[in-house]
Length: 297
Image 1 (cartoon, one colour):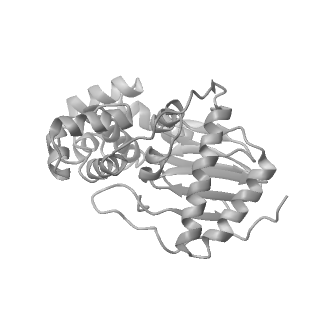
Image 2 (cartoon, rainbow, N blue to C red):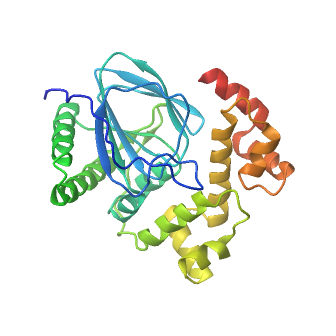
């Protein structure tokens, strides 16, 4: 087993994104290895995130669900859903890898695995922990050489690593097993879809539509609709509502914020539409969800 690297926190690549609720710039790839800590609040950012805990385990809240992540298991999730580390068992190190969404969309990965991640689920890889630890340690050291060639090499190796995860099968923390299917062809238009995702994130508070998204990219509405649904597995309208509900979930963590203001801040045209959508998606009204979430955290 390689030596655990010293705690490290990058000073670049962490910014407040104007008009959004993210605190990490989604188009930057970076790696950190540090002592894990309990997060005061949940957050979101546009990456696909890889976590690997050494000599400790942790409890997360991801997409409103409590998830237990054991040590020595690579955890993979889309960080565009609210997530928060709420408890740590033991003293150890956390490897964090932040993969920009366009890379994840472009890589030749089995479609079921890709859609499982983009649906807000957390996947636990079935990989050899000792070998993976050594690989993560090397990636971390090479990343900090700050050479473009090494970063490109690391990203290529991460793509192969995730393909191996998908082909070997993966687990969910709740015990439901998922088996990968055969790899599909490489997705096209990932850069366009990534820009659509960014535009939606920065304009959730506005009454935007599919036409607005298409106009922003200078694309035909039908092409925009088909491209987005082909890559993301859902329509722009459904994704927009999903993201508004995710933002509402984050705002509800603030116990001092009036629930009547949350829906309007998330772009719902009225409180009645907000309550109806929230009840349908989460199976409970916003007030009950807040009580349950604050009690959990």
